[in-house]
Image (cartoon, rainbow, N blue to C red; front, side, top):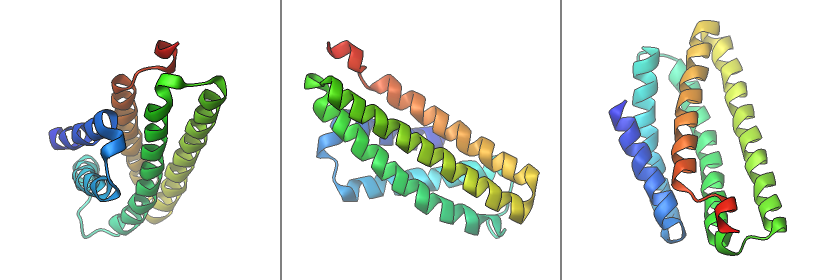
Length: 154
């Protein structure tokens, strides 16, 4: 679990402190490290052997989650680039994007909850959901703690 938060911290530091300078290759590298640590955390939490069929579904989920992660990165980049001169219109645009991305992420987790439930049953699917929810919540808190609020820039 400590490794997961080390990877998450590395990822978040790169987002909050050098958003504009991070290249696509660096984002892919950071997501790869985070994904590896996250998978180890999920395996430890769920106690499922890596040979289990669950991991095929999980790996499929991770590909789609990483796509949303890149969208989140782009949104954070847009936010930090405009923070000093944010208008009401831009703030509204950013909020609409944030809400749309959150909805897409929630839909993705629900879709894969159902896939895992069909494959492995409700208990395993619930553990998957709880693990993903925990990780996502921890990351959201870390990101929010590291970014200045729009209200601070009046």
